[in-house]
Image (tube, rainbow, N blue to C red):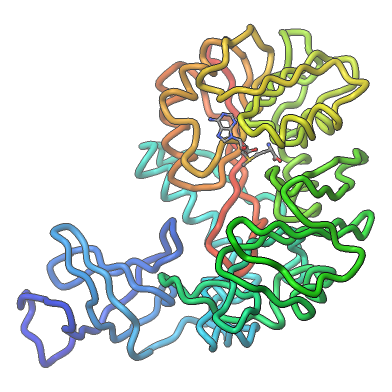
Length: 405
Ligand SMILES: C[S@@+](CC[C@H](N)C(=O)[O-])C[C@H]1O[C@@H](n2cnc3c(N)ncnc32)[C@H](O)[C@@H]1O
């Protein structure tokens, strides 16, 4: 609180205050408290920093504020390594945090989510693997600037900032972004394969990509092939794939370690729920073990069908909540950001699987699902936090559950 303002004075939009940041929270913002103890979310601040902020949004239980002046900076604060942050690019929201400190902060965010949302303050949260900080992303979704160039959106805005030299993008995509132009508005997905060098683009809306080099395939049905943990995977542009093969390898490794002996098929089939193109079914499930992949995207299912040829696998094209569950020895579930929710957990329980490996890309969803599973009789063995999205607040959590006695 600044000396000029009496403690407890009513705060309104535009009021300035001095605050000390407690911690980072899921979603990437920093959390502080005003003189009355009310939570204030501040963007671009770090734990331990004292900052002057201006309130921009007032709610009954919390407020939002923007950082206007740094009073005492964290030792982990750095100059953002990517020059487009200064242009306003909102693609990477943690560039001001030292790269080697980002992973620990993600572990802390997940620990806090399990403590608050799952009411599991002692949950065994451990630090897992991390991809290279720079130049690793092989799938990106970009928007179009008013000048017909590709870029990323400004934070909390629809404006698009041209990103001529993106820090996290694989060089094969970088050279594409610098070459092409785009006519019309919308978003474009770009994907490349590290294994084969293939590249492809897919315009989601009315945007038309111009000047594509001859090697680049286009459209929702265009494919690239990527190698992960010894498996070659076909990935259509309309199918989900992890941000990079490095990220996929780390996930496969974490899932395989969590699943352990449950992969041998002795207790029943392995279910790869929300299975995408078959990343886990094609890598962690041993050949000869019965596997059922459940996936709602038609494109991903046809890729999975190709990727799982020669294996004892069945591809079920349906929403997991609508799938008629079979008895399983292991369920690997990798839902979208919102998590399994009650409906997904209900289906999972119908499998009676003694072991569950849950992959979550949101800390709060991970904690919410953990609480549902624990209430249903599972024990959490541990939750491993991976850093697959450097320079951003995004987390990946692999949680291992076993059914209690
Ligand atoms: C985070 S991705 C994981 C895919 C895969 N496990 C991988 O790592 O590549 C989630 C997948 O779930 C699919 N999906 C989304 N909602 C679904 C639902 N309700 N039922 C089944 N699949 C769903 C998406 O199409 C996507 O392929």
